[in-house]
Image 1: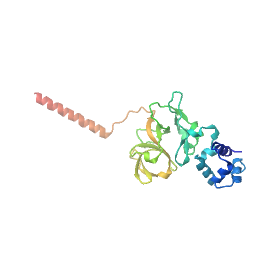
Image 2: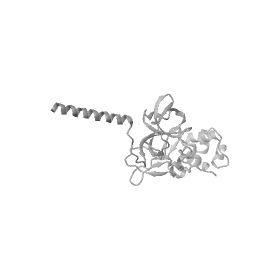
Image 3: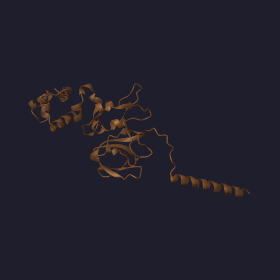
Image 4: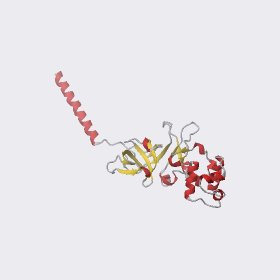
Length: 257
């Protein structure tokens, strides 16, 4: 017996379908299906995919999580039959926010769809956040000032690519780039243009098919209290305003004499 065997049996019983009927829907014989359910034979990928589509559940859940121990009905269903954990609340009704630490970041690309991995992440609550599924991600490098290396960006899960708004910042989980935090623009068909606020870093494109998750920026948790430097443009503006004020005072004094 295996976790996979137990899961497909539990799913079949839950949906009140016979072995023969399920085998028919999978386009295989009942005898072949029975071997998967009693654990005497392993299902190939094409059958795994059919089972996942039939029960509207991801392959990774069926293979790696004991679904008898979780409330499947309350899982959030995403495109492609992938599921994530539901929004959880504390005793005061505040939403829990999972924090992907620097240590946990290395495993996120493989574990983002695994409920057990997500449940292992540290959790916090931020009462001022609105509705939605939120998660915290670490910032690396200097491409997105004023967010500094080591800060945590809290993002709200974006269910559809069409919800992305030009010019706003997002955390992207991609197949090739991994985890990145950038400003997005949809001025390319079937692709997003990623922009860094630090002009030193060039813009680049990511295909829609390469994107696994998108989280819209909600807030930043940082530890730095470094004084913000005044830009040259800002300093020049302040200087001109000061000169304008002095000229006005001179004019007023002259008219009063």
